[in-house]
Length: 109
Length: 113
Image (cartoon, rainbow over all chains, first blue to last red; front, side):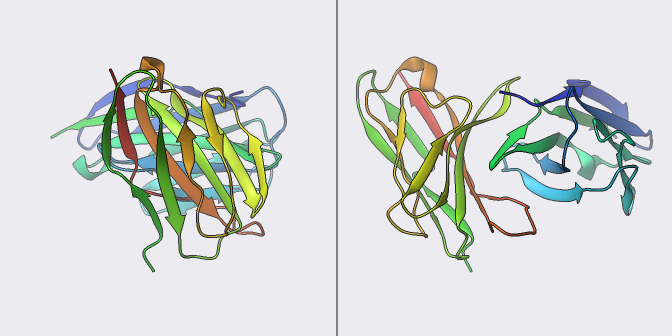
């Protein structure tokens, strides 16, 4: 079943505001991945985090993996309309990659 | 490279009909998987395969069959379609060794009436 829980389910921001989505697990994760799905599109890989406390940045996106490797977050600074979409975290259970339910981001100009 | 391709893009079935959703990849990936996506439910794993001749069940396997006779192809079969199987279906592939990022196909939107 679902290994990871994501909150919030939806987020509506004004362009220029920041956005954060959180991913939590009851068990220690070996790694965590983040994907973005644009409306009408397919999921696209963003990043993988492996190490405890790891922080990675991609332009305005900052990804963190918790010290206990049970939670992760994605933070977008100064959102733009191009950030619209659903962001998923995902974690492996054996060979199976299980996704959270996602956070849908709407950005109003 | 075409990446991961799926056919058809759209399909309407009547309850009880059968069909096969096609998935192919040209990246020589050993690992392939099928997901279904429903509103508010995220992506749920149906079946996956770690190589030709090897398949395993995911979270929601009931009503679906798979086989993997070649590295390139991983078809998903619905033997007797039900309205509950109305969904968007995504096929994905990745290398079995790292990196572990999955590449998704464009999806098949299936409606069962």
